Length: 292
Image 1 (cartoon, rainbow, N blue to C red):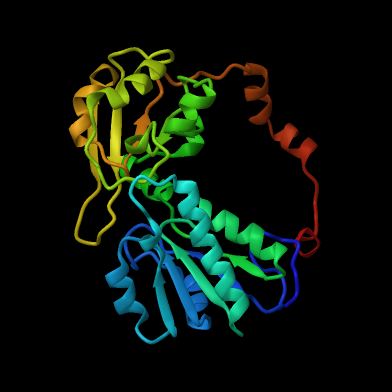
Image 2 (cartoon, rainbow, N blue to C red):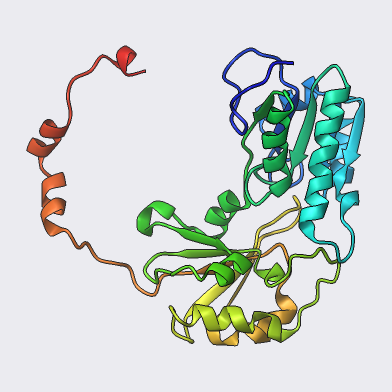
């Protein structure tokens, strides 16, 4: 097997692929890309971390020799890092044992908030296995639709909830903010206990109130994950965070809109970019073929 220097990149040659890392999208198999389907068809074994296993089983049928549900690795009270280690190693070990590719399929985008896939791409390469990573529809893509949000208008800032508290990143109140995994804040162990005490969100609320007024309206978003369900949006004032504890679960994201839209600061540049003369100054004629 030929080693590759691209640990987490899409294929750029015709070398045989040992591991396909693919995304399944957020709504069961409805958001599978053609690339992901092709990877599944080429694979002998399909490893998956997804909560629509029965749908995936029906969809895959006999297209692969074996379907392995890695969610069975989760253990109550265990540090998630240990769980992710086992998941990644099972994929790598099997890819090294058989003469043919395996696929590692994860919900959403395979590299967005997914630690096992990062480790697979890094460690498989070290083991001389070629990895191809394919994009998938992530929760972020769905949230843009749920919220009607265009990130190009005011930018976007995003942080994992616990990481935000640990590193104390500065938030810009003029830029929309996404706080991921808010329902899992202040915990690194896996647990099937999904209920929350109000106090779980006190530290996060207090931190957010350093940058936003207490009466600032925020939204908890739960994007649809089943074809027959709709996305769920819960709006409330920041100061009421603890009172929403019973409504918050691990798959939700907190959206904090900007307090105000920042106005143009560089007026001179604004006038310049509207000038035809400036466009002429910063561009040149070029053969489209050469540009490629």
